[in-house]
Amino acid sequence: MKKIINSGNRFLFGIGIMIAIMAIPVSCSKSSMTNITGTGGTGDNPGTTPGANEVFIQGMAFVPATITISAGTAVTWTNKDAATHNATSSPALFSSGSLVTGATYSFTFATPGTYNYKCTIHPSMSGTVIVN
Image 1 (cartoon, helix red, strand yellow):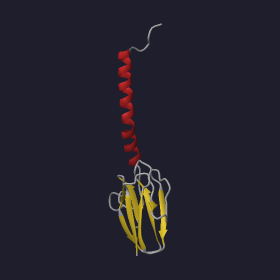
Image 2: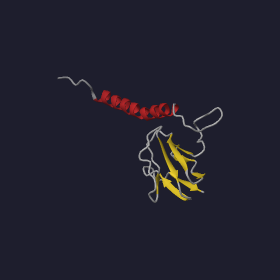
Image 3: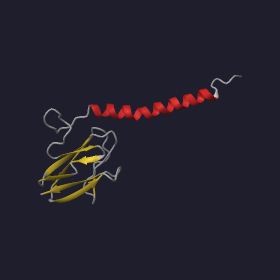
Image 4: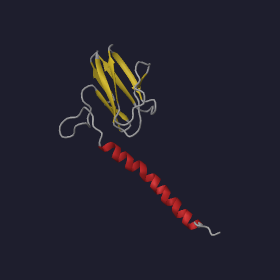
């Protein structure tokens, strides 16, 4: 029986598969970010800048990294990244759970103080809520 694919064709086939796999994340991340809008933003570019009492998760960071609010105010986190993130305080006061692209989470801060939080999936991402 003849070999259907010889070793030269296998090599080219393998290279083609690798190129196709590497192109998938690039095309997915661009298209998944195109239609994301938030409640914040002003001017000609709504949804790209957090509004009052909002934190966007974008570019593998919390934006803004520090937010100052009055007691009794809710902060809303919106994931604008293609990756799943969360916002989890330490000590444990709040935890958003996993936020996929476009998902939001809100928490009302009743007591004045400084609250640090991070993304437990990506521990280098951290933020602070200052409550007056």
